[in-house]
Image 1 (cartoon, rainbow over the protein chains, first blue to last red):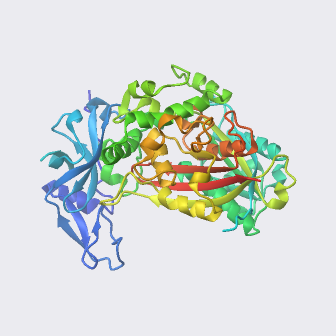
Image 2 (image 1 turned 180 degrees about the horizontal axis):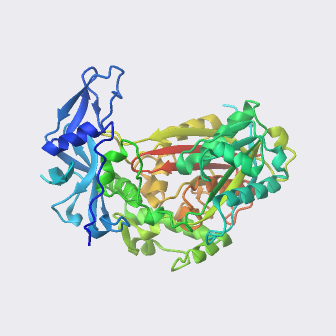
Length: 135
Length: 397
């Protein structure tokens, strides 16, 4: 039987392709505005804080904190139903970006808000996926 | 502030069936509901000069729905903001009528979500869109209910809210549903296992779907629809039923922001706009028709609309405060039985206007005596990520 895989982002999506391309080097990139210092995430071509549009790519150290989470016990998705229960969480990276991901490497029932986590890259052919494990 | 009475709800209809077994289309539900709502008002198709549509019957909806109904409206508004669309439509209809652009506005909704086994409620898979933001989280497997559970978990963490407190919302709406024959029939048709009033224990002992939310904290997945007719004061005077005035409206958006507060919804912005225009406050509301996709939705929205302070919703709803037979304690919540126990075909916003109107006419199965003021608040999209809020304040003569 064919292995059912995790649904993956499109690497050619125009706003986010630079982010996903960098993940192949295990780099978590985010943008910051040169003029007003606003951190922009998810990636875009414009600054949401001012109209200068001078965005610089920065690289996160990959450490952060669980802002909130849920243990998903029921999913109808062909991949996720095979891995349930699993933990979905909003992670606040120390540099500012908030990203939705999974917390792995710990039993779902042991995850808590405030837990310190770090990126664990899951490798796929065209891109790597930033999952998080306890730091 | 003086209260303006520019436009009133004069006709309503809720499509009674929740399982059409694939034999009726959304467009047919919309047309049937429109005809019955026009009859309710004592009006006819030819009186309608403004159409409001969320696209639930298909694309280019301003055109297709006009042709299907056989109308030639002068105002066409196709605002599509999910389950809150109908609150936006009501606000826009009031604005357009007040501006002299229209006299009789028609809002309709039809859905066969249950027949189509569309993935909403407990079965929801979440967004799979083409927006750049979707491309950032498609890998995480967030289900629709997990989206709301993320709010509940943070709410519990920050404010000490408990599952027992959230369960109050489920049991109050079920209490009202058991008094509404159409809701009871809906629960039968949708094969609910145990059709009776529930207890806090029933809710917290039902199975976890996405922690911390349990099965009995999730809306049903039904077919259904309805229609609302809104008219100018001149038209309303001659209608069959007493007018229910649209006193205020508010709109707002909310989306994920770095460092943002997930426990606060767009209602924090739409509420003051609507209450301010109406010149009333939350504490004066007899009826609260609040979009109950899940228990946490109601809790967060009640706080954001100003019924209690942020974080105090859990203790505020305790002890059955939201029941229709406790009018001195606060507003009656979702007296039709809500999305939790009566009707949720995907976009519940229209039912909030329908039941609020019934209450202000004195026609509800869980009637609050002398109900004068109601708030209808629609939440369109997802509470835990991105959504639109639409708040409408309604008042009787």
